[in-house]
Image 1 (tube, one colour):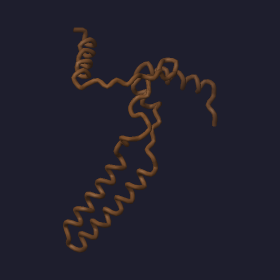
Image 2 (cartoon, helix red, strand yellow; image 1 turned 90 degrees about the horizontal axis):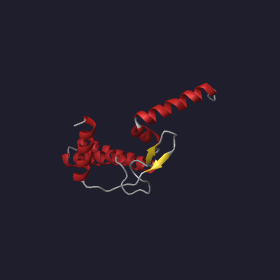
Image 3 (tube, rainbow, N blue to C red; image 1 turned 30 degrees about the vertical axis):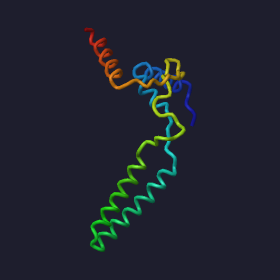
Image 4 (spheres, rainbow, N blue to C red; image 1 turned 180 degrees about the vertical axis):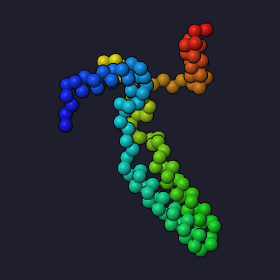
Length: 130
């Protein structure tokens, strides 16, 4: 069911308000990152194998086999929920959402830890009015 003109205007107004109030959240909500389905299949198979080894180790009173099964299960679940590091997609924000709804790309800077901490410190001091 399509939205009425009034509902569309209200929705656009809410989007503009969100963008002006919290552009970082608006930027996060506009991103569409999906993990590949294959990661979940591999993780499911790994968790199943780990569970079987865990049960087999308990049934045969072999603790080392149970420990191996648990480690495999844990690794499979961690693999499923971990961020893929070497993918073709860019990680992180793709840009800044402007008030008109357009996304302006940002240049990614590789600043060191100390320079980022100094920038944050300066921003906080500027916000507090000291």
